[in-house]
Length: 408
Image 1: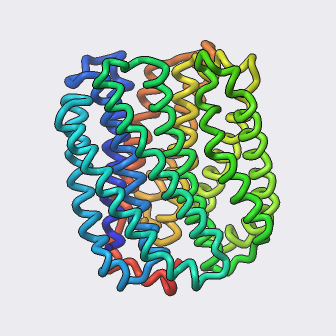
Image 2: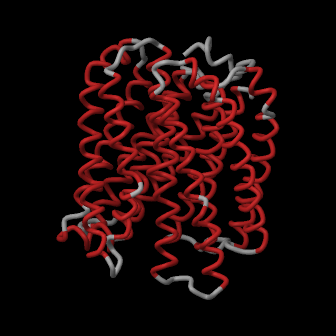
């Protein structure tokens, strides 16, 4: 596994941003491809191309030795996965859900199973030799939740074949997949990577509070699925698990804040300005995301939380860009997979400004206060330009080092 392969992940992120910007252009030009097809390509490449491939590089680089990476054929897994994701991008953009996109998606899931189960096997030695194990516990829990999420696409295929697309059962499965992807698999892994950096740099944190945070988040994640279903006709039967999970997640936030408030001082003292900005933005986005989930159980908020497409989109972008993507970029900066030259600084500025501006516009339009289509398109384009500059800011390292001696 080579560190310069992270530029492939960024290239996929750039594709996602270009497609997203193109979708914003629908008010001004006629798109050459069908809008729903591009939406599917946008989401699938965001999940599989950007987040998944970078998680492959980070988890193998930070938890496995070079010998384990070579023996486990992780490099081959990565290359095949990239090829399949290109197939996903092209097939979804051209045909949406069809024969070829289903074939490539199925191949991706099989590769996903190969990677996860191989990582489980190889990381056992790490877990047994690393006493502060909160990081590997979070990562492995995330992987299990990722496996759980993959049940949904198979079931969605069955419902679609029976002509049940558009039903509440169908949408419930879509929410099941999304929830256990970005609230489970991706979130737990990036938090595990954050703790891995803290452990490796010997930045002391309260292990007791860290364990309380882990268990609060873990016990909440399954019942928290009901928070995604409160817009359904059967919402009343879901209120108890929804309230339980929202409360438990707030307790988790308390323990995380209690633990990190002093830790961040030392973390930031060892970090440059870009790393601090991305880390702090990701943490604020995470806190805000959990608080918004808790607010969604209030009946008066139901119309806004589940009835406004733009508010839902703002929440999804908060989770996937503000939390997941900004944490991943922070990790790339920490590992020096991004240069500290002007393309990285300018690109980071464009990306953060574009993200904040589009979030504000989506929220305001969600409340029917203001919806400037032109500005939304401009700031979406600004994010795409920012990511392109970050891509220019990547530079090569020979190899990901042994995780026990890696220069974090």
